[in-house]
Length: 476
Image (tube, rainbow, N blue to C red; front, side, top):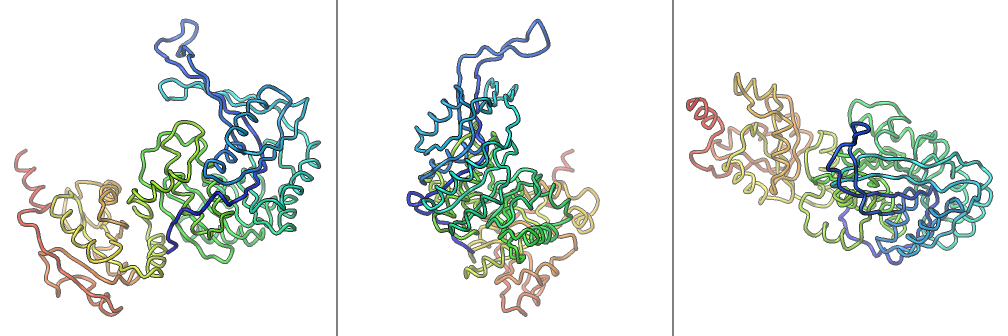
């Protein structure tokens, strides 16, 4: 497992090339409805302007402490001046190609009480007359940077992205691409491409499970000679897929999502800045996931700083944790085992979580470095416990368990026993609660056969889910 550490971003030099935008926000109270139409009336008392698109990526790069140069196309207008002023003030070096007959792209959002009510886009199609000048400018700047990121929002700036990729490779620089809906052939030869779920699905179609996602990702990368993909999947986390099929999954952090606007830009900026700072792709992905978990708690297009990453890394105990599919769990287990971590495994229905469960899980976690909790799915619980069970659905039970500090990974199984899962995970320690004898623990022979041990932990008296359910039924 690649241990996350915050690199020295100050020595990293990043070149950002792509579509530039200015995000404008009109802020005010909406306390009445218009007499002209059934719409809220916003009394605007504040205006905010923030760089958007590739400019927001550059702003995020600078916020991390890296040196950033930004190349893109703007109009010869007031919005371009506002954009440049914001970026320069944040430490971004701007190399703009000005088009007098074309307006800078502006997105205007109207917000009230931190809720977006309306968005208006001001933009016109961009021709290709700027392309030769842009390529020349990129070629001039490449010797002075450690990595290039191409930010493609399909606004016309990037006519032939593969030309820029070839220029970067001629200069010996790695290239990261943040794509939109162009065919992936437009990004051939890139070292890393970061599609989100929708962009990836647009390129490969759907997938039934994690294994198929990985297989399709590897095939896509191989067919276009892309070194690796980082597929961002929102609440399902991020998956790094190498051309040869190697992969690394990072679960999403458990946070209250406030606003996802610009989160992809923060992910892209963290990936390229970490790459420029010399991190492995696995570490780059972990840091990008960490940054995403911070930025979605902010309003609008926002940035994340290196100190924020450090604080989150130091204090957040939910990194690389949570509910997983079996294939994702096995990937995490392989990485943990490679890092020499001791794996503890337990299982059960965990229908109504009570103090006995919590004490038992805390005791189990103390035996090793990672605690895996395997949980019976709803059909399995019904077979084992009878009609009316489970009281709580599988999704609810997994969410509650994932929130416990003692639990690292939660996985569901559909069989009556976890023996098939145990044969795949091969934990170092299998534990059960104190109401079992060692010779009664299901799967004990499997664990011992692989060199593991079986432990029965102490019981908390007078606590039982079945008894709690019976008590509730008696009272009603």
